[in-house]
Image (tube, rainbow, N blue to C red):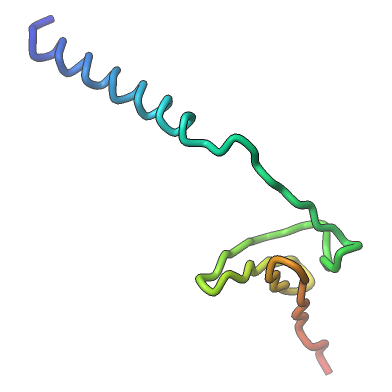
Length: 83
């Protein structure tokens, strides 16, 4: 192995190690999570999509409808039934 290839290998290994170690050291010491279920207003147990809007709302897509979460309450938007 020539000197250039050895330096490339060392650089790649150092970069790979840094990519693993640096994010781990930047993680917060405690994570907070909250669970929301049917009792809190979700219309289904299955969530197909979640979007965080720049306004701060979290939009949650479920098969029966759409939910908007403001951090405290869920608002439900369902399609009107066919007439």
